[in-house]
Image (cartoon, rainbow, N blue to C red):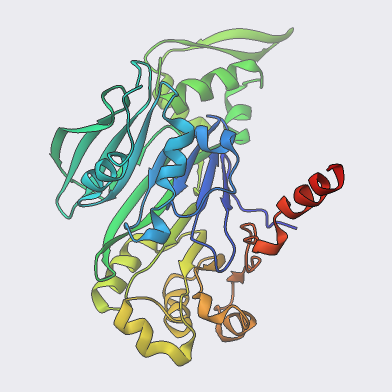
Length: 370
């Protein structure tokens, strides 16, 4: 049974096995759209899942985190939408080069496009790869980066930090907007009666709309509920709504265990609800982890002690351990209060052997007919 995470509007799903290319999909239920973190092998995802993607966040452009962009483009380029893509420096030129390998002589005016945002230390550089123009790249803007936030909408915000993996590699924090519950004591104190007006007030508040306009409410009168009016809606909301701690998700994919990286991880991911983190090597291969700027199981144990997330999912284990994956769970030692989650070794389809292809059956049937 899947764990019940305390997300209100988000539905995270890790769409890979322990050995598969990392692939995190977050469903934004009220919006009907998806966010995708990393873009490796994804041919096992349904077309309707891919066409609902609003934004893609690529940690770095090693093949196992990036090769799926061709498959994604195959499904979405004829849709009249612009997909946002966030990644490290140089990713816009790499995407243009990948797509330039195809002929786009039949492109049409209503094709979709990519808006690519390159995340640098002190700025964000944005490019448009226009579908109607055969995905030719053009610079849109180069703006200062004031904080860690790189993407936000009315449900969530995505923050990022650059870490070292011998190439720049982004780590992410996805946080829901703060939630609010209705303070029953405040309703009783003001003589207010619950009704459809609360739903209308929530809609105004969460969308930050019509907060300067009067709000009709219901108050308890001598003969029953009576309609009244609140003029100062902002002050009214401040008293009526009690803020709830928002849930958040941390995503670490391919970083070295260095002091600089640890500082950035701790600064960004302290207090996350659910942590997804690469655990590429076991402790015996610590030296290999250091030379390739990956994490081993002991490194992850130290991160868990630092961050103490309520839930933790290890991912991206090296395929060299494909016959002994149980050793990973034996070496991981989450601190008290952290639940270790498990996933299957593989969820992508097993490749077919030559002898398994059905052509032999067709050949036999043809022979019988003759």
